[in-house]
Length: 114
Length: 115
Image 1 (cartoon, each protein chain N blue to C red):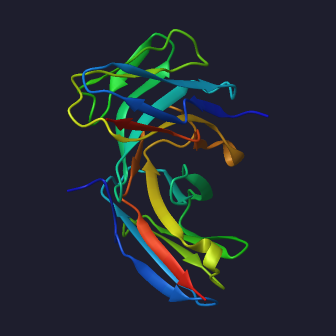
Image 2: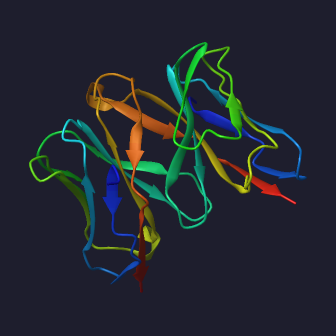
Image 3: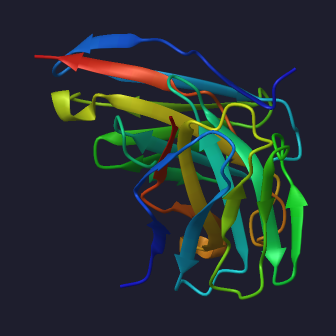
């Protein structure tokens, strides 16, 4: 079983719609959860982090965490063509320590069409 | 500005040659990482280092070597033993972000092509 799993997509939504990206993880002891956006040919950039159960909102982005179900999701409201990218989910067992490593999913490719 | 600098951005290598990719950070982060990314694939961990003079193998360490002589620097050598080295290589460091939690920051990447 992979540590972190994402639907590879591609996910295609029209401009203005809500895009929903999902991620599941296997390690129940995981403490930190991240969503990275990666444009083609570029390096990943952090867009959201979440550490507690529930929702966390930042502008058009909402991260949702359910530790009991080992599930984390990213909602993008009012999707724009500039949101077209690959979204990577990452999970870490640690929060306050820099020990250990992050585990990445394979990413979900999102296309927002005008 | 603090950040991670990778060089070169593009590199071409002939088969049988070793090449070294540079990674320097001025974020004062202890932990540094090297990932490999192939087209349409996620990130695969090659090596990581949590402290100077110490490093651990990741999931795909064969054919690669690293050193960590200084906190700021974590160079990666792609040796001739690496069977399929053409890929996008990403260096990252892990340090405290907001809320005291650790956050991984990436360099711009180095694209290696074997001719």
